[in-house]
Structures are given as structure tokens and as C-alpha cells.
Image (cartoon, rainbow, N blue to C red; front, side, top):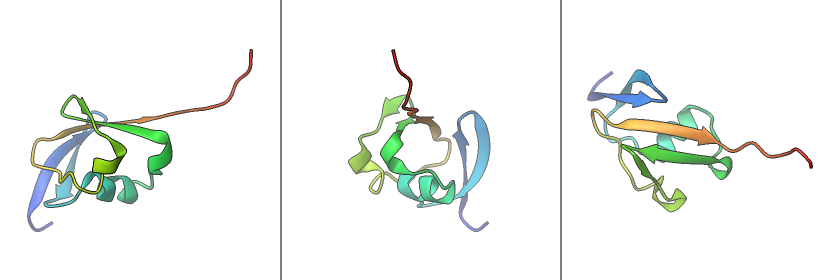
Length: 72
């Protein structure tokens, strides 16, 4: 992969393309943005930033899914 970077996604090291955004990562992983929170280098990202925040070599990404349902 040309211009590859190494990032960590939920604890797993991945080789990724330089210049990709958080939104690109979620799309490639087939994760819908409506029901997730993304933490980048220990900072929770606002959903509006997914398209704007480029990934850099060494970034640590945690993707957390919200699961609904249940009753009392």
C-alpha cells in the first residue's frame, strides 16, 4: 500500500492509507455512523468531525457501538 500508515483500531494494529479520514475508516469497516462513538487518541470525536479528521501514523481509534433495546 503506497503511503501507508499504521493505526490501532480497537486494539488491533492495521495498515491504512495515508490521508484517509475517520469517515473513510468507518465506511471501509462497514460501520454505520448513526450508532457509534469514536474515540481518537483518547478524545471523543463529534460526529460532524468524522469527514474532516484525517488519520495519522500512530493514531489510536476506539469504535464503540450503541446497542438499544431491553425493558424494565
